[in-house]
Image (cartoon, rainbow over all chains, first blue to last red):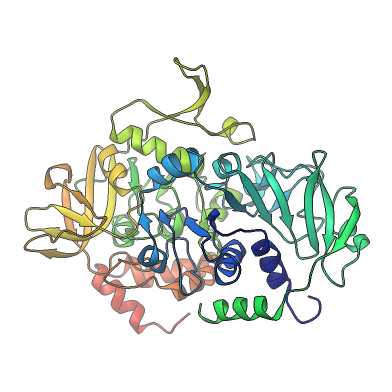
Length: 233
Length: 273
């Protein structure tokens, strides 16, 4: 936590800034939902929120705790079945941006949300892939939101749940990474964070862009919109 | 339920984040069912309870967490420590599960999707590459789900046994039609079903049994009847974390209650967790 905002807040703000009006976003619960709803409340009111429970064009007045929250169904343009969601909407290429999180990420943006340790006798059994494998290959751009630690940013995944080929950005609590020449590269650090701190929080030898910049601090308007969303939850 | 669900059966209790058939899950626990193969996209608390009570031999699923909260501790204990019994896993993605149900409902041997490409999941599940005979594109084939019993919760049935559910309807229609036998628990039985926008209607002749279970989705919700009990989902994290506390809770609220009415009453009496 730096300055007058929390890690969650700057992550949500940085992700939200990358969404454009009219973009169709496949949203999971937690930070992605916060980011996408923030975009709708600020610069991208026409951003279309799709939750995998089947709600298309949801306009929640408060942040949902679950992807199946009744608030999403009540405010959606359409509610479709789960088979329809994955076949007609995701697989057919109607989604611009998909948000993913994970327990582990490697330098190519591949993600693990399945197990820590071996599959047959795991140290930690994680929830599993859910929608992630087909989101990762079915949307145009994948945005990853993940706290940056050496345990999460690893040289080699314990299990590859989803592929990194469409990962366009990784927003962390320390900065922003984007793929350059096939490898995630630090392109921005959040205010008060150094490139060395970001490298120390990464389990591989993190590349740093020559044109490394500092993230623009969250504006008062962004923080106010974010906090009012959270208070309404 | 005693007539339709037997030890060793493959059972699918569906309801994607809404209308989760908890009352039916509790009844399976009261009847002491064993060796079940449990099929469900999101095991949720309902399967955490069945697994923790030793009712399951195998789990077929795609996302096994406590939504918005974290882990399913009884599921993790079974996988990580074989407690109270070893649990075989057949793990899919959501898209794969949805296609497998739709194939089952269509009486096809498998479903097809553009998915399961690379990564480590294909080697760990029942899926095979298949070439499109028209374009040559390589797709994924997933064997159909054909459960012995499909169980869902709905808002209403009429006196003839026709069922209507609305709101987020998930994969319930496919789960019922893919299964050899089916059971529907409902919030209420009405004289006549009133059409609702976006509703699914299951005609009486595809449903083997309708059971009245008001509040039977709790802690999930029934659109138009009651909200999701988010506090319960958070409290479950603590209740389920400890083996003894879980067992005590299940005895008090499920095993020693006769039905969903007594279950709800027992929760109202209990000190909030």
